[in-house]
Structures are given as structure tokens and as C-alpha cells.
Image (cartoon, rainbow over all chains, first blue to last red; front, side, top):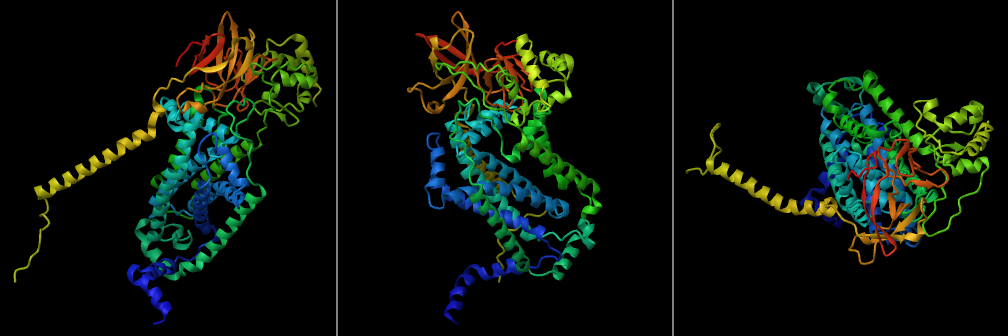
Amino acid sequence: MTLLQRGSALPDRRMRVRTTVRQFFERHAPPGLTWWHTFGSALLALLVVQALTGTVMALYYTPSPEHAYHSAEYIATAVPFGRLVRGVHRWAASGVVVLAVIHLLRVFIMGAYKYPREPNWMVGVTALVVILGLAFTGYLLPWNQRAYWATTVGAHIVGTVPVVGEALRQLLLGGVNVGVLTLTRFFGLHVFFLPGLLTLLVLFHLLLLIRQGIAAPPKGEFAEIGPGDYWAAYDAAKARGRPFYIHAVRDVVMVAVVLAVVALLALRLGLPSDGPADPTDVNYVPRPEWYFFPVFELLWWFKGRWIPIATVVIPVVFLLVLFGLPLYDRNPRRAPGRRPLAMTAAILVLAGSGYLMYRGATAPQPPPARVAIAGQIVAPSADTTGPGLFENEGCSACHAIAGQGGGAGPDLTRVGARRDAAWLKRFIRDPAAVRPEALMPAFTDLPEATLDRLVEYLARLR
Amino acid sequence: MEEHLGPQPPEKGKSLPRRDALKIGGLAVGGAIAAAVGVPLVGAAVGSALKPTTPGWMRAGAVDAFPKGEVLLAIIEPPVDMEWPALDAKMAVYVRNDGAGGFTVFDMHCTHVGCPVRWVQTSQRFFSPCHGGVFDSAGRVLGGPPPRPLDRREYKVEDGVLYVGAVYRVDEQLQRIA
């Protein structure tokens, strides 16, 4: 026996290392696995990357309002490789959400959530919710403007839950406003509680995967198969298949590609920062991160007492429908071509959330307003030209002209081509009288001469 | 040789009182441990978050800094002797001098989803940059989706200085509701 053999026999005799490794890599997978099957491993790799980069950043990061922003900046500017580490953590966070959704879609399209893998679908959807929780709590930690205001808006959205909303909001924030206790709370959740929970869920997810095997692609006998025939067909398919390590090569390639993309994004696009959190900045325009755009944009359609439909009912019902999918979809058909209803629903959901994300990403932003601060002398702007009035009368808070202004009301870049001066004047004085469904407030207090100048300007925009 | 078989499983339908007692006892002790560990942990995690807090009075500025009839932004900072964690809660409020020693202090967050509202002096309105909420100079909703008027804050005047206190909500008639 060579020394090497003796050395490797030592752990194997005691812990069955070789046997376990062999069982894992040499077990057979059913034939027909594709590149689409690699997104789960790529997701797992990114989660490991998040744990590692997060742990390194925890060596420097300080969760207090005085130090959070500067310690995060310190990581990015002074720590060797810090810009890469923090950048990767930030971009991989988006990558985790993207890969989780692609992985979920693959499982959905291939009907892999059906017997016997229903429990694992539910574990996966639960893990996705925890991932969104990690994304939300992690977003606050750099303590910059976008972090502070996204959390303020997120907490207000929680506050719209009927009856218990305000209690939930305070429970989340650790107080009435986003403050020091919010930061320590989110830090604890982001660094200890949620990663621990996610680790348990992922381990359970993988344990079930190894126990049940990779789902056979929905072709041939697997295009439609019920529980009664499943295991015999699956075992036969596995016997025809190749060992797992042959497929694992594809996984490794995908992991390499994903890591390269994340590193490239981190180095090229870096870390967006708009200065330390300033709770007193009234000119900041809060925006959520892209994966929360659907909820933020749904708020355009539900107003007043209907707000909880957008903030609570639609998201919660959607998650429950997703979670419970294998409970109500017990159809033995697995091939996507034989599930027109499921495929149509998936396309509608994807198109809908894609549209909302596009809207959120391209929403115009109002320019900063000149707000008078107590103790400072701010002369009101004397600009009485058309563009000046458009600014000073608050029009630009909701309307854009040539890309400048808010997105709440219609774009007025070419409003003169659509409406004449008389119509515009009547509308601005009392929008509801012209169009009962208009949301714009009436400007009855606007002096006649001012309104005339404003309308003259607007009518010339063609 | 007589075989020693150890305790036998009970016949079907019969139970052994001793085993039942052990099962129940084991579960009871386990439950007590879980409660003894869990209650303090959950209690500490919820913490003071749900306790109604009475923030101290925060200085908004000298009364003279607020000309009558105007709405101005004021930065409020807690006094240095205020107990932690209020120390960090630097905020902004809008103050309107109503005359005769009366003030209205508005919370700066839109009542829709909390975006900061801007006061536009010329048009005498508050605008939210997020979903088009518009409020008048009394905080009433003029347009857009906000469900209620701007929240307000308690205030007091002492030695010519305006101090700002807790946030409360008002209904459409501007009457205090919470």
C-alpha cells in the first residue's frame, strides 16, 4: 500500500468519504438533460458567493447610521479587492433573483413540480421568498440615499396591510421611522437569521433532489405519467442514462459563465451611490430595486382604499398560487405542449411583470424643487416665462416636457399638437369638469394672467 | 437457555400506561424548554418596537424664523440629552405659521407610500414625486392616490422656540384620528 493510498484510506474507513462521493457523482441521471438544467447549480454557486463576499464585508461593515455609509465606502475604496467583493455581492444579489426565476420557470415548463417532487417545489418557493427578504434587508445596509428611501417606501407598503399594518411596519423598522434600530434589525436579519433559514431550506432542497433524482425531461413516457407508473419508468430511464458527473461538466461551465458575468458587471458598472442617507432631503425621488418594481407600479392602478389590493392582495395571492401549484395542478400531463392553460398563465404573468418592470425602469423623474428652509432666505423664483411657470407652479412634479419632469401625468412634450389653448385653460382650471376621471387637482387659485402665459407656452409645444 | 427478549411492544389496541406517561412527560418537558427559550427570544426580537413611544420635543427653530402664512421646511434634531436611540433621528418637517401663536407641523412623508413631498411655494401645494400625490397648504389631498391628508406632528412653543413632538394622523376634516 502506497502512502497515498494509506492516506486516503484513513478518512474513507472512518467516514466513508469515497463511498459518499461516488454515490453522489456516479449515480445515474435520466437521459435528455439540457443546459436549462444548469441554472439550479449556478444559483447555488451564487448563494455561496454571497455567503463568502458577505462574510468578508462583515469584517469591515459597521451597522450604525454614523458609520454604515462610510464603512461600506471604505470597503469599496480602501480594502484590497474591496470594490470587486462589494460589487460582486451587489450584482450577484440581482443574479440570485434572476437565476431563481429562470430555475423556477424551467421546473414549471418541464412539469418537474409534479409527483413525486411537489414538496421540493414548495421548499423552493419558500426559499425564493427568503431570497427576496435578503434582497430587501441587504439593500438598506450601505445606508445611502437610495437605500434609505427604498426602505422607507417598503415599510410604508407594509403599513398598508389592513388593521395590523402599522404594527407590522413598526415591528419591521424597530420604531416609527427608518433609524438606527432599523439598521441593526436589518443587519441581524440579513447576516444571521435569513442566511441561516436559507441554508436550512437549500440543504433540504438538495437532500430531496438527491433522494428523488433529477426529474426526467417531459418527453416520451414522461410526457404524461401518473404516480402509479412513475417510479418504474424513472428507474428504467435512470438505467439508460449516464452518470451525473458527465452532466456536472455542463453545470461547471454555466457556473463559470455566471461568475464571469457577475464579476464583469461589478467591475464595469460598479456600485451606484448617491451619497449618505439624508432623511431630510425632500427632493429625493425614491425608487425600489427592479424586482420590486411590479408592486411599486401596480400602485398606479389602485388608489385610496384600494391600495392594499396592489400592496397585499396581489403579491400574497400570487405567492400562494405559486406555492400551492402542485396541490391543485394534479394533472399527469407534463409536456408543456399538453398544458395550454398553465403555459398561457405563465406567459401572462411574465408579460405582465415584464411590462411593470419596464415602466418602473423608464419612469420619468421630476426635477428637484426649490424648497424654502426655515432660517434661510430663499427668494421665490421670479421666472415668469412659460418654462419657469411650468416649474414654479408645480406642473413638472407630474408632467414631463422633453424628458424633464414627473411621470404621474401625461407627457406634455407635444401637447400643443393635441389641444388648443382654450381647452388647456379650461382643463387646468378644473380638470374634473372637462374629464370626470381626471386625477389632476384643480388650479382655481392660479391668477388669470399667469394661467394665460402658461397656456400660451403649452399650446406652442408641438 | 432462556432467551432474554427485553420489553415487548404492546399488543395492538393495548397501551402501556408507563410508556404513555413517559411520552406525555417527555413532550411536556420539551414544550416547557421550548417556551422557556422561545418566549424571551421572541420578546427580545420584537423588543420595544411595538411599545408606544413618546419622542421627546425636538427643536425646529426660533418662532421668528417662520413668517406668518408661509410653509417652510425645518430640520429637527433631538436634544443631546435625549435617551438612545432617538439620538440619530434627524428629520425634516414642514411648518406653517397660522398666526396668533398657532402652527401646523406636517410630516414630510406622503401618506401614500412615504415618498418625501416637496412644497412648491408659488403654487401653494405639496407634490409627491412618486405617484402624483398633491396636497394643499393644509395637507388636504387635492389629487393622486394618497388615502388621507398629510400626517401632522404635535408642537409647543417655549421661550420663543418651536418644538416638535409625536406624529399623528388626521381625517378629511383635518380632525386628529391617531
